[in-house]
Amino acid sequence: MALKNATIAIVDDDLDVLTAVRLLLKTEVKQIITEKNPENLLSLLKENKVDLLFLDMNFKSKVNTGNEGLFWLQKVRKLYPNLPVVMITAYADIDLAVNSLKLGAQDFMVKPWQNQKLLETVKNNYQKNNDSLNLPAGPAGIIGESPGMKDVFRKIEKIAPTDANILILGENGTGKDLIAQTIHDQSLRSKNPYVKVDVGALTESLFESELFGHKKGAFTDAREDRAGRFQAADKGTLFLDEIGNITLAQQSRLLTALQNRYVTPLGTNDKVQVDIRLICATNLPLSVLGDESKFRRDLIYRINTVEITIPPLRDRKEDIQPIAAHYANVYAQKYGKPALSFSKEAQKKLNKYTYPGNVRELQYAIERAIIMTENDAIEADDILFSPIEHQQEQPAPLDKSVNLGQVEKNAILNAISKHEGNISKAAKELGITRAALYRRISKYDI
Image (tube, rainbow, N blue to C red):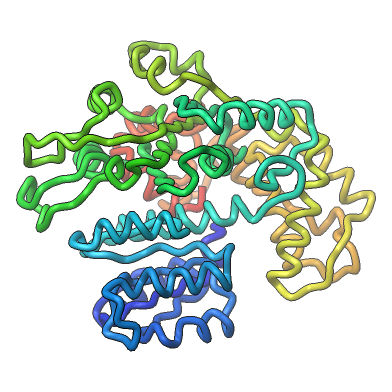
């Protein structure tokens, strides 16, 4: 996975936190940098190419403002505007954490956290940054010269300033997250929080707690009060990714919150009013969502005031070369190489491929080519496409390997392909929970 190339930095004056994060992430990322003194933060960033920064809200430091995290966040945003920052906070500082989103933080983590939650936060925010290293042509620099993308740009221009709920449709890797972020950035809520939740990855037990919050003692691990993502997004935008993968029971609870415009945290009957602009995304077509045995029609009406369909990369060949050139420049700079062009044979190879993994697959192929090439230009042989994507597009029969890991990986690939990317159905066929399937997908880099 691309996460293996990531350098993650965490700045916190609690040595236990630094040790725990280092032990958890050391096998997941390329490098983990820990620092207890925020006074060393700027020199740390100057000396290292950091891909994602975790920053505590409060320190025992020379900056005595009561919210030192916001002070250092603003310093970082000024000097490194493209560096994603995740704030670390205790529940008592939840209002400060929300303010940090307004000042440019990408996300926040409430401690104490579960290890799986931290890993998901790292992966989501690192991927989000990679998907938005972009781009010269459309809004917020999104690359798109094809008629299909120009139509997407026209819709963004019209709907972004409104409060209409948006449903973004598109295959995996087409950039739904980037489109959602762009709509928020061009909306009247742009100075308020933008909060993303991958609802497809939430188990039944975590769904309500994550979205609506909970009170201390509401369940076994609820050691203190916690605000949910609806509250964190108040006055801003809430982006629910992979909405098509939630269960009917989860759909019912979500619909109630959207209709009433309030949430009820677990463990209490107190209603908390919320004012959000809702954006949802799914890789499932509307024809699948229209099956009421799988997805509530009244919820579709609620989330789909306007829909935006992002065309797959194979249907917008005009965009392949500009996107490839962009990522070639990005990764040449990242890996300290001179700017490289593409040979004619390399361009033909890029144009001929069908990209089952869409823009994300093209991005990773260009990154590999930049790393491995020893030529003055990127040649066709430098460009390798993922065999996993080939298997997902045209699933091959299980190989004869008796290696348990390979057998499990093949079973997962076939189940996902059979159910056209529907993680819930694939997990059910495999006899495991959706969360367990997501962990295996991460484990095998699927």
